[in-house]
Length: 132
Image (cartoon, rainbow, N blue to C red):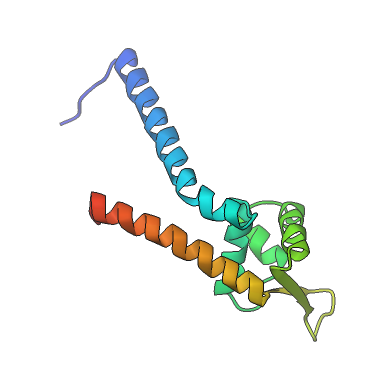
């Protein structure tokens, strides 16, 4: 059975959806904000650390393609991670122009700490709300 909605009802439903989406996004960002700020990371930088931690032979370009952003956007984030000594680059022996990203010991520790903090918060949510 299909229920037809008039434009006012549809508009209210859409506004309710946008508000719920915005509130959920804010709550999720608050969830990760503290562990990130303690380690001077943006959420984007953490996602890059996480990708490097879970992928062998990853490059700037690989991350840019996966995240669907420009290479220069990822390059800016990686530059900051290099300055914080969270990552280092190793040239590909077959093509010295290609640089693989790796986590330093400090980068591994920070990625693990932030991941554990986020996982604990998320686990608490799942326990409160129930698994899907």
